[in-house]
Length: 250
Image 1 (cartoon, rainbow, N blue to C red):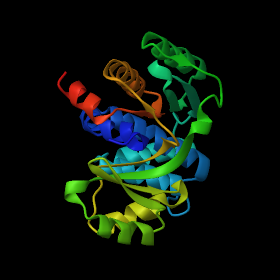
Image 2 (image 1 turned 45 degrees about the vertical axis):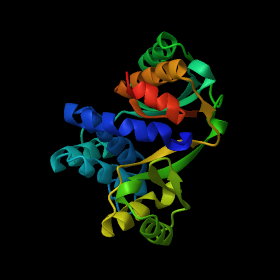
Image 3 (image 1 turned 60 degrees about the horizontal axis):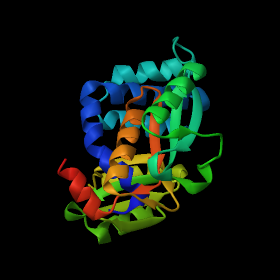
């Protein structure tokens, strides 16, 4: 499995569990709040809000929850005082990690994220220590066995996507974040439902991990992703197929 979208693929099963626990709704509410706070309540003129609302609907978040989050963002209701922060650091094996954060208490969150890194054998770094290793992209992943590469290319590229590539047992559709809503809508209209979709940070190069290091890195990634204030976690690791097979055996 190629490393450029490796974590996005691994995270898919976890996201299904999170949605059942309500954790995903909480994170998506924050995304809607911040999007509305920055760009206003109209999804037609606020691409970021349009994306956040679409993501919320995709996991069956009730309409009332979405509207309440929008009102918090616009100041019509209390509870919209969230700031965006990016934390960067290193995991086991020198893996570069970036965390997109939304928090109402920077000091508390910084302390908790630093501790998560340290407990799992990593280290929180300074601003821009690893950012240069990533590009922000819209990403859609499809199971290769359930999607036609030709159809994906036809629909996605016409909608403005940059690339459609084979990524292990999946096809990855990549696009600029600005056209992400348009590509998402075009894929949906064509009946092409991705296994997972998100605006994320993809690494420009990757670090291959052995089984022991991979196990430690995945534990850190899951710990970070479980934190209520972490919206997205990106890393530049790749786990070779042999190591993945061994990890799958437990």
